[in-house]
Structure formats: structure tokens, C-alpha cells
Image 1: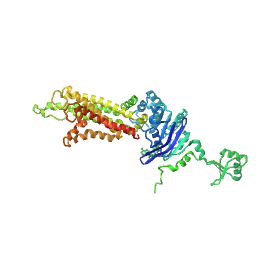
Image 2: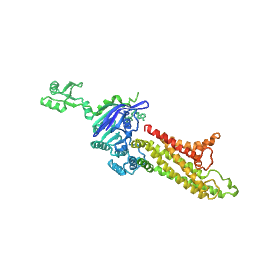
Image 3: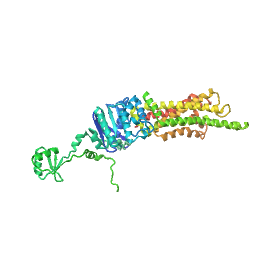
Image 4: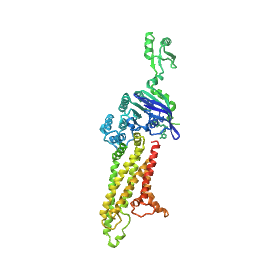
Length: 303
Length: 254
Ligand SMILES: Nc1ncnc2c1ncn2[C@@H]1O[C@H](COP(=O)(O)OP(=O)(O)OP(=O)(O)O)[C@@H](O)[C@H]1O
Ligand SMILES: [Mg+2]
């Protein structure tokens, strides 16, 4: 269980997080989305006690992180997979962390096995590929078998196999009843992995919703074309749909599924030339939500 | 706390640069031996009338500053390497009270530098005495009862240099900055004492690390610094930057 309450964090003049509140419950994957500079990493750093909040608080299982004894047994985190001493082996890297929380070498070997790095456990981490470093970072998060997991952009730079592996791992961790918060700036990835979405922009909450609700909210109905549009409109309205003329010429139908429209048309022997569901993709929904809060937008090159 | 200590020890043991440090320690012993051997060879080659003109710094005066520098840089790297690689964040996330991380680093750095300092000093001492024999050359030629306290005090200055490096590294979070602080203390400030008017030059020379070992051992009579006072000054070299680091590591964003 993660609770962020009225959290603000300023770095000198820049406000990284600004009055942010949300909570993340156990048993599902919560996606933490926002454009570059939205404040995702900052929120996680405050949650992990690395940065002190300017105001408000961030709690894990009702506790301030700094007050947790042996925190690795409760919270696991991946912030920056590249944060490794290149000369240390994967095993030693994990062992150094494990020891601080009284975790033994056997558990280190176990998590290395779990993330598929058992074969390179004694190799210097400096020589690892980006994907291997991400796996090592995830292994570190899993060391204490914690109930709460935070991952900051774990799929960055991974190949499709790696992306799928992380997706499945996240889902299985949540299915075991853990609280999983996963940040990303890619909705396409979240769509497949997360159940809930917390979207922020410029340090503020934009929406806190489920993937399903967000998709429904951006449902734009079905575009229907028929040579007997007037009769079809009447039939559809009778079935409870809302029908409006579409600027492109056809009918914009909302409130009924495309299959219902097809069935009704067939029953009344009305020809249909086109029936296109127009729900915006989650990606578009996300772009629309965050349009006002994108920090670094590319401008035309020649000005 | 034992877990944090074990972790810090494992961190040092598990990187290759620590082994290079050991090699450097062996090199210091060999260097001292070489200088002593060379001094003895020259002395033997001179006609007896000119032998008295051989003076200057003895081999052990070379060993102490090299050891202090090596230990200081070691102390710096133990903490700044974590800032440079970013691993400090995992370390502090694992131990959110933070000060135990610094305390464990200090304990491990002190133990390692004390052990290395004692071994290198004892080995250099033995080698130098073997080569000099009973020639009246500059060097540790007195009876062991006189020499051992100086060696022990020198080992303490090595520990202090290492902890000074650790504290400076934790405050500055930069390898270059903290190594520069160590170098200024060990090599830049001592020549300045010759530029200061007396009695200030002498007083400053007394309180710099280079002059503390003999004063702690009581080997030179000194009106400014009694042995306990010299020991307190040495302790301050470690305690002040470490204290500042302890305050800052708990207050600053990581
Ligand atoms: N240590 C810092 N000092 C100053 N400004 C900072 C610091 N850390 C973050 N910021 C600023 O705070 C804002 C939020 O940054 P943050 O890293 O939390 O965003 P993010 O959502 O993780 O972005 P990204 O998707 O690019 O990783 C940015 O404007 C950033 O420049
Ligand atoms: Mg980020």
C-alpha cells in the first residue's frame, strides 16, 4: 500500500511535484504515467526517503520510509539500473545490498536465478548489456521478497523479449498480492501491463483511473454510413442509441456496440456501407490528457 | 549494524582497485628498502673523511607521506565511487537512517588503513634497518624502544588521513575535490609553514599531520603540543570532516 498525500517537492526554483495525492493498492499493477519531467522519478525518490518532501508526505504501508527497519523486506525498488560499480560482479553487487538487511547469500543466488542471470552471476556488471542491467536492478528489488515494489521505467531500452518478460513478471508479482507501481511515459506499454493508471503532468495529478474506464471515457462511438441513413437512425434511436450526423457525412452513433448496430440493420434489411468503431486508442487518450503539460515539446526545426 | 559493516567490508573486498592498493603498499616497502640500500652503498663507497656529510631525509620520511596519501585517497574513493556510480542511492535506500552507512564505512576504512599502515611501516622499518645496519645514516637507527612509539603514532596518522579523506569525500561528493583536499593538507600546507613568520610557522608545522607523529610519540620536545594534545589534534583531522559528513548525509537529498 502506497499513499502519497498532498506531496510537493521543489528543487530551488523548479517545482517537480506539486500537491500530488494518490494511493496504490495491492494485488494489481498500477501504471504511473506522465511526460518527461512530470515528476514520476521525484515522487519515487521521496517515497524511498532519498529526497525530503517540501511539504506533504509519502507513506509505504502507512509508514514514512525512513522509519522502516530493514526496508528491503517491505519495499523493493528499481530507480536507475545503470547505478552499478562496473568492477563488481552481479553476485557481489547484490550481496553488498542484501547484507545490510540481513539477507543471505542463498537468497541472492535465488533472485539471480529468477531474473535469468545465474549464468553470469560472477561476471563483472560493467560488461552487462542494458537489458542485463535492468534484470540485475529488478533482482535487487526482489531480494527482500517485499510486498511493495516500485519500478522506474523498467522497460527502457529493452528488446521485445525483455519487455514481455517484465510485463509478465509485473503481472505475476501483482497476482501474488503485492503492490506494484510501475512508471513509464509510454501508454502503449501500460495498456498491456497495468490495471490502474495514475497520470501526472507538471507535478500534478491529471487522472487516477482504471485502464477500462479511461478507454470508455474516450469512446467516440461508431461511424456508420448507409444509403438509407434516415431509416437506420430511427431504428438505432429506438434501440437506445444516440445518433448524430457526423461532419464527414455518415452517422455518429454512441451508446450501442458495433455488433448491435449490425444486427439491427440486418433485422430491418437496411444496407450498411461502413461501420467503424472510433474509440480513441489509449495512446491518443493519454496524449490528449497530457497535452497541456508536456514540458519539452519539439518545435519546428527551421525558424 | 553488523550487516551494514559486513556490506561495507564486502564492497571493498569485491572490487579490483583494492588489490591494486595492496600492490601499491608493497611498492612503498620496496621503495623504502631501495632508498636505504642505495644510501648504504653510497656511504660504503665514500672515503671515511667524507661520510659525515651524508644527511637529509631518511627512507622512513618517504614512507609516512606516501602511506598518508594512499590512505587518504582510499578513504575518498570508498565514498565518492558510490556517488560517481550512483550506487549510493541503493545503499541509502537499503539503510534509510543513513548514518550507519557512514559509520560502517569509517570503521572499515579505519581498520583497513590501520592494518595496512602497520604492516607497511613495520616491513619498511625492518627492511631499512637491515640495509643501513650500524652505519650512522639518517633513518630509524635508535633502539626499538624509541622507534616503536613513532611507528605506532605514524600508523595513527595514516588512519586519520584515511578518515579525513572519507569525511571530505562524503561532504564534497566528488573524487577530484576530496583528493585535492587531502593533497592540500598533506603536501601543500607543509611548505607554507616556512613562509609564515615565527612563532606561527613553527606552530603550524606542529599541528599539521606531517609533524604530529613524532609529537604524539613524545620523540621531540615541543612547547606547543604535548603528546595528548597532539593526539587530540590528530583526532580532530578525522572527526571534523566525518562529523560534517554525518550531519550532511542525513540532511541532504541523496
Ligand atoms: N535534483 C534535481 N534538481 C533540480 N531539478 C530537478 C531535480 N530532480 C528533478 N528535477 C526537476 O524536476 C522535474 C521532475 O523531474 P522527474 O525526474 O521527477 O520527472 P520524470 O517524470 O521522472 O521524467 P522522465 O520521464 O523524463 O524520467 C523536472 O523538471 C526536473 O528537471
Ligand atoms: Mg524519471
